[in-house]
Image (cartoon, rainbow, N blue to C red; front, top):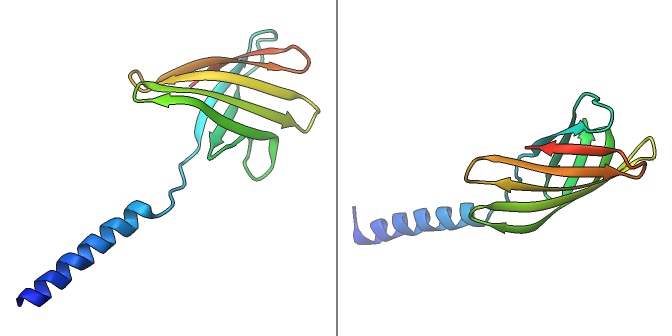
Length: 120
């Protein structure tokens, strides 16, 4: 292989690495279970990714809204989500996730003062 061919090959590999590093990534949704503290009702699944949050199927959610990571470091994150539901409920959640143990917990409250426990 000539020196010019070798340099061209190295340049191609470097460009490919840089292009893949800069390409936008869509994170897969994370899921948390919401358990009603007041009624003992079955759990709901809260999904969140890329600033969006929803309960139910993403195509036709029963509740949808925003997700924000308030703080994040190598040990975990502190997150919040606010969702508006088709039945008029507004649910506000705050939860923490530990990367050390791979689990998280938190609480939600809706506009009818119903409380939920969040488990990730």
